[in-house]
Length: 237
Length: 179
Image 1 (tube, each protein chain N blue to C red):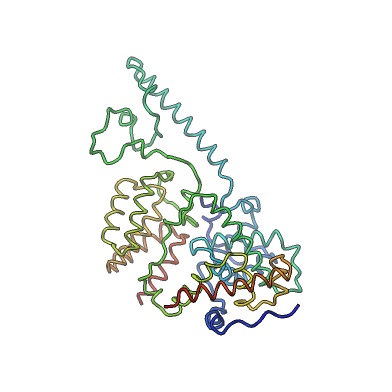
Image 2: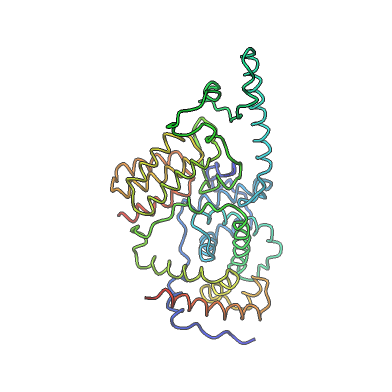
């Protein structure tokens, strides 16, 4: 079989500068090698696919935990207030949260100007894709267990990200503040804090951006966003 | 969500078991990242996909002919990993909108070389992955066609056909982007 014709000069000029393989950052390399070495040590875990694996085990476990929690809450309500009419039959069962006493859940209709109905904060689904975004190497040091992202939480961060993309960093910070207020320990904290660093840097508040980046690094030492910060930092020099 | 493996700090070098696949991977880690990026992986996905490449490489290592160069073989593995991931991404809810990507105004992208790279990547995006892989292997990586065909498990005729089409598509995409 004959050789293919040579590349056109136009394509050759375009591709030639990219033939060199650039070395990856040492931190990224170390992380990748550590992950590979860890996969060698525990091949069972390594066999699990990173993308689109089988989340049914987690979904089933979460379902059991939620069902037990709901049953315990219903039993508690029934035992604690036997004289009252049975509200549990008509009230929606929401995920019990440590920060929200049951009284709030069973409270009468919220005022119209309430920021968000409590039910909206309950997990809407357990698709693993929700929490998959940029969570590689995520280490959460908060005491509260991560809560699945709700549509409201997601929408807020989408808004903030769009603001960052548009260059409206001040508005992005406002949205981030709103996210802190409503979802302090939500499941997208890592993404929120990364956006905060970008917004502060975009506003030229370098010291605050550096502090936020340092805090981010301490909280999420394996985050993929760290390389983005490194690039931003290199670009500012 | 992240595996517990991700929480591990990098183990000291002396604790990493000697493993030929790991050694090869370690030696070519930059190339793996390079190949994945050119195959169209998003920056936020590259590390996960590199891990997938390692796992696939380990699985297929007994079939690797050590007398042949490793890079074309690695490229073939990376191509399969990216193809599989794309098929899955189509079925899953896309959350790309949450990715933090450098905006066009960032200082990095203002650099000439980055702009050129971005332009090539944009042009490559217009080429279907199967043809793009052939073009990248042959025209960017300068891998002989016989090895391209072997790495991608396709007949030589198919490889040539894909290369010819991919070049045309690339040229057309560049022409469309040029002012």
